[in-house]
Length: 260
Image 1 (cartoon, helix red, strand yellow):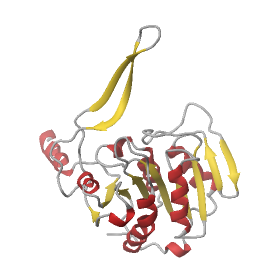
Image 2 (cartoon, helix red, strand yellow):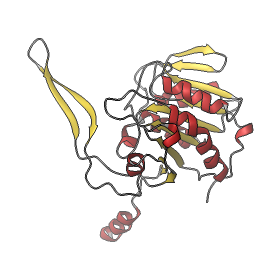
Image 3 (cartoon, helix red, strand yellow):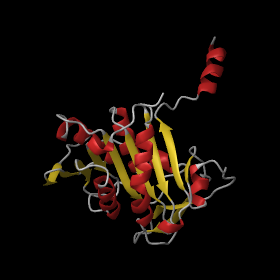
């Protein structure tokens, strides 16, 4: 069953990201959050942490730098940011909602398993706080434009908050890279799949030793229409509830029978 609806006018909001404290997308998310509540806190990485996934910093100490009364930066991962904010900075009065993003680039298909943006929302969800990850799709070779997220982000969050969603679930929200006045419908769809291979570039350093860059391009085979990948491809806004319970129920029953 869905959790109780969120009253955004009275909720404390924590903002984080994986692109870093100085990222344009974070400033956009602050504007979105400010239209939802007047109690906004920020805790974000000092530098970009893209593709950090759900990693924690456990082999060195973490530094926390205060930039303003409710604005902080850490030298760790997005997961570190949420953990520090909820269990230290805001421990006396935790937020009622965590917003992560707005990421430069979509987090659809296989991206969600690598994404620090999604991981920050995942950490909040694990700690019992409702969370939304926001990402702006960027076409290959294009300059990132967050107008779409800025124009539609608050409205989509309000609709999701009014409906509520269950504990153990986060909302993954992706915006297409078309002009804000040409965006398609808001579609609630499942997580898709487009991963066939990654773009690898091999080069040589001055000493003749090989090194590699992992690129961002993805290949896709059959993209099913009811997925986040397809929605972004046709210019819509994709809303996907992601569950933290990764158990495959069919295989669970199958293996139970096989182990008897």
